[in-house]
Each structure stands twice: as structure tokens, then as C-alpha cells.
Length: 238
Image (cartoon, rainbow, N blue to C red):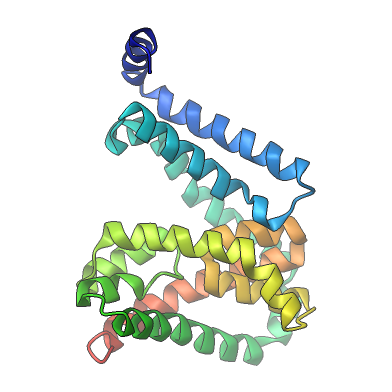
């Protein structure tokens, strides 16, 4: 950066609104690119926006704490946004009730597979125990996953990164996995996405249709609760 641009950035970075502004602009640009691509999964707006923001912070040498001082308002909105997912779920309540046992079986299988497979793969590659435990809650939404990681001896900051990476990979690649397995049901695709890829996957599911998004939201919430109960109990054996 030129000295003039550096001085301008130092001046702007003192404003807490800068983090919020660049976050909203980055996502707006990313979503525009996503629409221009015909809503192609590989052009996931979260992936593009995160890449843009990381590149900008690295280029300007801005500390994450400085950026987050302004962007934390977006973080605060995660709570109301998660609660609002109950509305489309309510519209699908009759079907959810009719599929109670398949949902329960899928939840148990998906949750246990996500936890055990992550730890076993990390162990196979020689990862340290704290890293293994940080990986275990990777398929749970970030606030819950970080709390679980801290409780079982993992590294919460590492868990947060792994959760985001997991969500992006699921949102980008989920469609291709479902197509390869010839899974056509919107309910099954949505529930699987929610169990494996939490909030980012759920956002992608809602872009498909309301039913897919509703089942994904249900799975995200149930998987978060089940993992918070099961993982501290089984972490010793893992």
C-alpha cells in the first residue's frame, strides 16, 4: 500500500463501523457473484466473502480484534437469525411429526459419525489430542462447538475455524454428494445438510427451497443439543 492509502486506512480503522461496513460490502459483492453464476454451489457467497475479508485484513495488517470491534453486530444477529429458523420449521411441523423415528435414527447416526470420524481421521494422521478434540464438534454451530471444545480439552479458536471450513465444504459440495447417491427427497437432503454443515449448510438449504431449509434448521438445532450432551460423555473413549 502507498503511504497515502496506509494513512487513510489507519484513520478509517479507528472507526468501529469499519468492520461492519466491509463485512456487509464483502457479502454483497459475494452474493452478486453468486447470482451471476446462476447460484452455482461453488460460488458460495460465504466462502467468497470470507476469502475477501481475510485477504483485506492480511493486506492491511489489521488485527482480528480491531476488525471484530465493528463486525460484532453481525455476530450478535446470529442469535435472532437462529431463532427465526423456527418459523419455516413450524410450517413443516406435520411432516416432521410424521417422520419422527427416521429423524431420530438419522440424527443419532449423523451426529455420532461426525464426531467419531473426525477424531479417528485426525488420530490416523498423527494429530495431537487437543487437535483431535477440537475437531470432534466440527459439525455443530460455532458458539456451541466452541463451548464443547473448551469443556472437553480442545482449542476453541481452532474449533471455530474448523466449524466454518466444515460448513463451507458442506454447502459447496453437498449437492454433488446427494446427486451421486441419488438422494432426491428435499427433507432428507435438508436434514443431512443440517447435521453435517450446521448454519452455513442451512443457509444454502434455504436457497434450494423452504422445505429443505426447514429440515436443515431442525437438524442443526437437534445436532447441537445432542453433541453437547454426548461428546463430553464419550470424549474419554475417543
